[in-house]
Length: 121
Image (cartoon, rainbow, N blue to C red; front, side, top):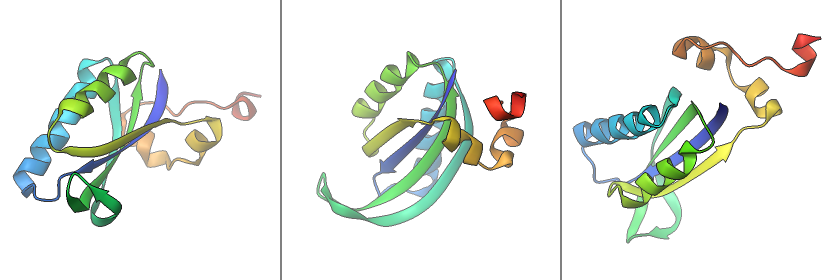
C-alpha cells in the first residue's frame, strides 16, 4: 500500500455537524476501499485563490491515508459526486515526503512507520 496526501476543499456553508458527517463519509470511503486514514488535519475556512462553484471561501481538510493504488480512482470518483466537495487533490508521497511526516501520524493510526533504505542498512 502507498501513502497519499489528500487535500479536500469543502463547501464553507456546512455546519459543524454536517462537516463532521462529511469527514466521516470520506473516511468510510477510504476504509471501504481497503485503506486507512492515518491523520485528518482541519485547516479551517480560507479564502480560495479563485472562485469555484460561486464560492470564494472553502473549508480545507487534509487527509493522510494509506491505501492500495487501485482504490484512488474510486475515491476520486466519489469526490466528483459528493456534493459538499468543491475541489480535491490526491498526491502519492515519495520516500522523502514519508520520512518528513511527523512520527505521531503513524503512532496514532497504530501502524508502523515505513522503513527507508538508509534505516534498513
